[in-house]
View 1 (cartoon, rainbow, N blue to C red):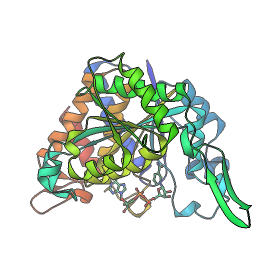
View 2 (view 1 turned 135 degrees about the horizontal axis):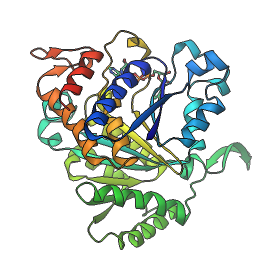
View 3 (view 1 turned 120 degrees about the vertical axis):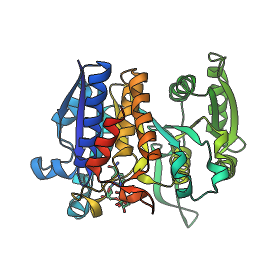
View 4 (view 1 turned 180 degrees about the vertical axis):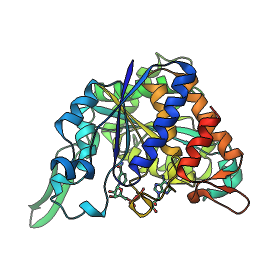
Length: 354
Ligand code: NAD
């Protein structure tokens, strides 16, 4: 059996993870994978029950599992509690505890939703890219100084450090991901200015020799940001450092036109972790109107990356495509002429198409 820890979290977390689990059960019945689900608390829900956002027992269960499916955490109810107990701390604890070193964010334009993109339809047609972001190194984790006085002037600084093994690990993940896709990697850096980027580029070129079937090109981060706006369809896999990835993945996400649709995976040394890119949406929680597709697509990634069940992953993705093609829309995507559906209806319709 393959054990999946499900952490619904807060807000719409329960509704969307219920949907994803229903879809996983459907593919399990069809593809005979042997999935087993166990539920754990994290975030505000865990704080209310146990007085802490990430109980040790939750992290332990995640470490022993084959994969973790996560909803979202946070909400106004917990906005004023002590910082160390905030729901979002659960995410940092899980990232650290599971050694989640690589964040995968696919961005795909669903043909029926092209009008929802802020970019012109001719620019976004065919966009299907994957951003692979290094998640535990670089400037977000380097030594820093909040304030110091030098020659009577106050200053602050941060440092970007990358070691060869850190770069190798994330770059291999990018090349392996590209082999499962259209076999093209774009490495993004700022090698014209930064020493850490020059090392990054050298390591990428070395690793690339082991993947002769994958095409490689390099872009400076400023050019990449521009290319994402003027020609996003050129990209297959983009691999980059923690900070550049943070910025570029949000830029790329906005191209799709809907926050409710996008999944993510964080690849770990122990267990990998799957969640939609949006938060707990407290404004719509409990109303059965949240779009579950980002979480359902995250479940597809779980099958692909943690369980190597490519066919089952594709079956889920095709079912989401078909649901949108057939004109069904949750309220966040609804337009005149479409059929408005609830969270649970969306789940049933996707399950029917598997
Ligand atoms: P959010 O992503 O929760 O919501 C932003 C807007 O998008 C809201 O109007 C919401 O209704 C809508 N939305 C989000 N997901 C949707 C879905 N699946 N279907 C339909 N509409 C959807 O971001 P926010 O409002 O800035 O944050 C709310 C809470 O979530 C905060 O407490 C924040 O800290 C937390 N948060 C958690 C995570 C996480 O758990 N990974 C990520 C981001 C924010």
